[in-house]
Amino acid sequence: MRLVDLEFSDLMIWPDGRGFLRHAVGFEGPITELPAELQPEVRRVLDVIESENRPREFFLRIDEVPYRVARVQTLDGVGYFMRRPKYPVPPLDALGLKPAVAAALRALGGSSGMILLAGATGSGKTTTIYSLLNEYVSTRGDIAIAVEDPPEIPVQGNYGEQGQGLWYQVDAHAAGGYDVAMIAAMRYNPRFIMLGEIRSPNVANEAIRAAVNGHLVLATIHGNSLPGAILALQQIAAAATGSTDLARSILADGLAAVVHQALVKDPERPGRRVLQADMLCFGNEHGLRAKIRGGKLEQLSTDIEAQRMRIARGLSPVEL
Image (tube, rainbow, N blue to C red):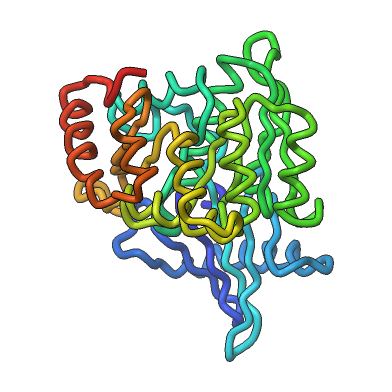
């Protein structure tokens, strides 16, 4: 058995050289220490990492498997946290989304606005956003630009049966920061824009304005609920505009959908987790947008429940 043959979410290398897996399929518990026969593979991974001077966070490919690596300075020395994304990018229908949610997200590929994916760290947001953009650029063509720090999955290239879609990846750090990379990306007039994560006020502001101005923007954010994700984006954007009312107004016009997701333990399969997702779709729901504009996020619970019931019946959450 080799490391590449195992299915897991993260590889953690301790300062003493021991390797641990997180959420390894077939093993009980969230953390599993690698067996002795695989420790030489950990040494090989370390040799690759330490073969050159690298930043604190970087992208690395080992045995054709991509990893997002973070160097961690601990009391006992340097360790590494290596996140392993799903690769190749799974199709949208393979994520475990409810059919009505997948269908609604697929339909949004023909519109403009912002699709905001929220959840905790390790909730599968990256996999979902990649799968979604893969769906759009493959079936609808045109230009997609992904701005990330660092890029997590190697996907740049031609897409679609006749190569009618182009997906570019931009390393935000190498470009001089998210702000600079975002402004540069707009010069190419991309149909689709993907942001690894909205962190700064300027990026939030640029992303929302791009959504209002005819682009379809896909972005992730940390949030513990659908209203919580909207509030988080509103607060970040308000720091750039200097006005909460203006941030609310732009958000009300720009949001196309918000998805909150989590990965929960599969009781029937040790180590496996399944996706649970809630969706709030805006469509032409003027009343829903009015609540965003008025800052009445606490009133969204009625809309969320109504859309949840429609999704459970296999219906689109709203008219798109």
